[in-house]
Structures are given as C-alpha cells and as structure tokens.
Image (tube, rainbow, N blue to C red; front, side):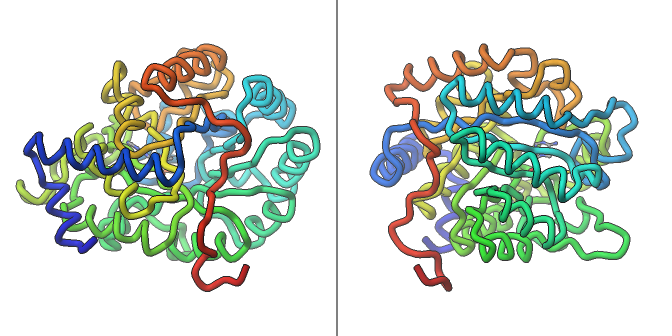
Length: 353
Ligand code: 5AD
Ligand code: FES
C-alpha cells in the first residue's frame, strides 16, 4: 500500500468505507493468525525510570509517584499465576530502571524458563547491547520497544536523550532482531505534533521493520507531564494534527494488520481506557489478535501510572483473566493455547534459515 493510500484511510470518515476497512482487516487477521486470541500476562516489575519522556507518567521528574521495584520472589509468583491461568507468555515491563541489573534480570529469566513453559517477553526500555545479549542468552524470546513516532524531530522533542547518548530505537530494534529476539514496536496515536503524514509513515515503517508484534494505543494526557500540561501548544495545524481518538486507533490497528498480516497485534489497555465497554472487543474485531491481562500485584497497580484512569487498575489477576476470557468468547473467538509466537511463512529478510 502506498503512503498516500494509508493516509487517505487515516482521514476516511464515511461509515460504509470504514466498514470495508474493518472487514478487510478482520478477514486478513482470520487468514493469517486465525481465531485464537493469545493472552500475555503482564507484570509491571518496576516503575522506576531514569528518563524524562514528555508524555509518560513514569518519568523521573514526576515526584507524585511512589516508586517500587518487585522482588524476584514476587515476580516468580506472578509467573506461577500466569501458568495457572493458562497464559503462554509472561511480559515483564518496567521504566528504564538501572536497578534492574543485567545479572539480576538474567537470573529471573533463567528461572522462569527452567521452572515454567512460558515464553518470556521483555519491555525494559533502551538498554545496552550487552544487557540485551545476556538476557537473550538467559532465554528471553521477545522484546518490546515502541519507536513512538517515525518523525525524528518530534521524537527528539518529546523524548530527551540520556546525557551522552543519542536515543536510537530503530538501531536497538535491529540489534534485537540480530540477537534472535522476536521484536515488537509501535507508536502512540495523537501525540501533540503528530500529523497524518507522520502516522502513515509510522505504519509503513512497521512493515519495513518486519515487526513480529505491533502495539498501538491513543495518547492519553497525564497531568504530571509536560505534554499533559500544555500539549495543546505543540499541536500541528488543524487538519494535520492526528486526533488521539478511539476511531484513529482502530484505523491504525486495521492498517497495521493489512500491511503486516502475520504480526501479533494486541488490543491495548490504552484503547480500553477510552472505551471500557467495547474497546477491547472492537480492537479484536478490527485486526488485533492479542490481549495482555495484568498480573501485577494490586498493591503496585496504581503506581504504574503511565497515563491516568488506566483500565483494569483495580481488578485482581483473576478478575482480569475472567473478564478478558468472556470478552473473547463473546465475539466468537477462542482463547489461544501455547506460546503464540510469530508464525512465519518466510524467513526474516537478511537472515538465513
Ligand atoms: N498515553 C498513552 N500511552 C503512553 N505511553 C507512554 N505514555 C503514554 C501516554 N501518556 C506508551 C508508550 C510506551 C508504552 C509503554 O506506553 O508508547 O512505549
Ligand atoms: Fe520512562 Fe517514559 S519516562 S519510559
């Protein structure tokens, strides 16, 4: 699909045309990844972060948040819960926390791989090559790192670098792929300053990177962040600025499915936050095939506040499991079994099988 066509879909507002888009995305989803919806148990292992992203509530400068880092024992009991609930994957996510050391994390990964049948996904930010390599060797299977926007100038505006290092998420994604990880990335939809052209290029880049996993969700303003306080100041001219809406999120999910038929695409919590009643289901009906039930101990949930009013914040792991299970069944889909990794029909470009 040409960029022009992607952008035209993003601007499309006619209901009959959009119904066609949803149908095509749903059909490709069915053909490429089937009816199973895989569950990934999410454990938010630390909300400590050394970065100052202008959009994110975990930013170091947000002093309103009480900070935690889970112990290895707490993480292992979440992994045991994931097994008990029949999840195939545990996703360990955190801010960019230097207290998560290479060896400590490698030990946890090894223990999970030794004691459970779970696939291990990491989402721990921009880490050194040596960390990524050690964790891969310890048995991690997948890594999630959203590039947030393909517009380099916008990225630099909202994502200050560490003192001495340019932030290059695309280079890290390539590194991860070379190490043998399945790679996931994605963007926020409707960041102040994001144009339709930018979002169209984001989606084209998903395809170019041959992503195994694609996570997208609406930008939700957090009052404890610069963009939450005066995001309006940074908006692109009207007619160019992408709105941070539910509809734009569905369009992005559907187009991602059309361009990346084999990718695993979650119906995200940020989307559910905009529409608690139907968001998850509509995401799944318009291209998505994954959901990520929260396994984080309830005592820590509220402190993992990337954005406010997050869905599923009070539900226990058991409630999250049964809520998502019945939502999946209600739309005629089935709960996936096994690890649910990327099923490739062709080898990754530039590698040999
Ligand atoms: N609104 C929505 N999503 C956000 N993220 C960070 N801050 C926000 C926000 N205010 C997303 C980013 C990040 C992921 C973990 O959460 O895309 O990569
Ligand atoms: Fe930590 Fe954004 S401030 S990931």
